[in-house]
Image (cartoon, rainbow, N blue to C red; front, side, top):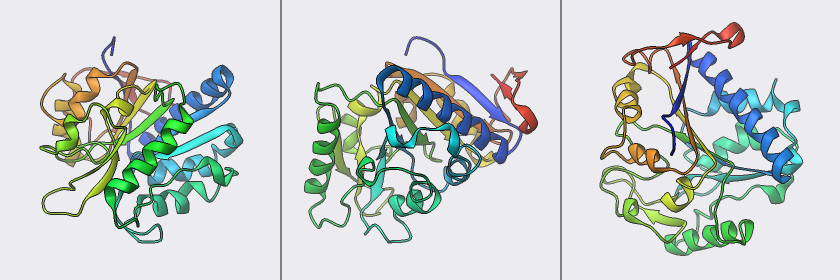
Length: 256
């Protein structure tokens, strides 16, 4: 990364979601104009739900969904209809509500009893999408975990050392089951990474990650070749220093 992260702060979680939605729309329109398609990896967990609602609602008409290719940054090893499935959350809040061609959505085959096979299958789909061998996502959406993880790259995971494979099976938090996740060769090559962190419980970790490179998985994002944009709300940003009021419409906010 050639510059410090760009940090956008909404007045509240709704404001943060609107800032993030505007960034997604801008990146989508720019990618389609420049390359004819927009390749995005969605974040899992609960943080993106409001962002998805905006993209499927008031912002839906601003995106050429027929030119969008959707990946999932990570997945739990559960069937696609399971309540814990990232794919199910994305389908119910976004993918099933916009005119995306079915073939433009690539889900992990998390129900496969062989996790390494499921990871290899996902990597195969990625390599078909990027036949020149460079996995240049236009946008990688990532949520910031309370332990500093992104995607399913948790502190201490052997997946953190992966340099060759684009997708792997990796340990979950603590004694949890295996996850499936994109790896650094993909995430660090993205043209833009949009890091989402909402709530006061994320404040100290967000400040640590945005302070510079370090040992946390999310601090590895400083090594990326593209732009890093962090979107926070007032709660998660309250320990950051500096800032000025930005033109963000009725949601308010500032740029650090």
